[in-house]
Image (cartoon, rainbow, N blue to C red; front, side):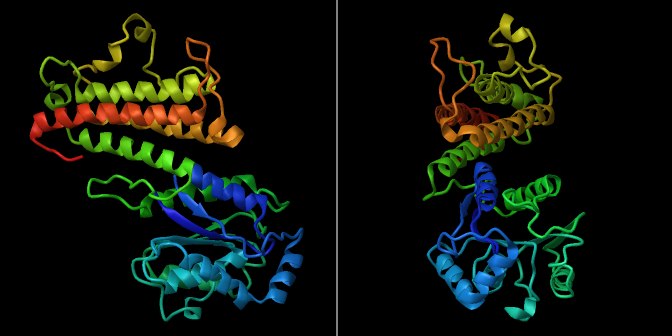
Length: 369
């Protein structure tokens, strides 16, 4: 779970910037998008820049800094074009920055300090032939930052558009924007706050969506921790008269992920190659992994299911948010919405993580909540 402060470009807080922020929110992150133009947007870049000049770049930056001061310091600062100015300033000067995302612009690091701050990762994205970036100023500044720190990455995309990642503008390039978003999501996953067991901390004061997804990811990560590094005996260990095993939990929850987020939510056939008619013949089949299935193989199957679930959640959120209704009704004819399914999955994981607590302690004495 990562908290991001995202500043818009010179044309304002467009629907494309909001959509970009929503993609990151659907990935479980908290994204703040302050409107530095007080509701105004502009049809062209030239009109937007003219407005920024009238208001004053310094005044806009001060407004952005005030927005940051109302939040914790443990932020990733992100900006598109004009928004890079406050994002880079805050990343370089505010203590506690977790990272920076600079899109379609970059300033010389000397604007805000002698060097890029140690320990603060940064990604810079632009089109290689964008005249607003390859202008003798932004591109050399970006390369200087990359040369200075191992935590800096510069990605140049084919093309000459400036605001290529804003889907509401004619300059939008879907392929480049998709790759940018994928890289940004990877960056945010790397800098997120983890606890001592490698779990992403759920947000404590976020909106409904971020809170739900935060707790789902936390419960998933708990199962990951409880089932790491097991040998065959550890996978098959039981407690008391119960037949539940850690290997069985991994296989069962891979099935449950697929059942709810693919088959129930979207009415699709199973995405898991190993789900066959045996499930119909024996409902407990998935609880009994074979002796040939290793910990790595079971984790890979479960990870495959979760990756697909995240895509299915993204798709549903894009269509109707948490109110998206499952396309395959329950036996009573009712169709739960996505909100209900996520809460149910949190409950499913939490219940089985209680089983995993007892099983793991019986295997090697490891404990922890």
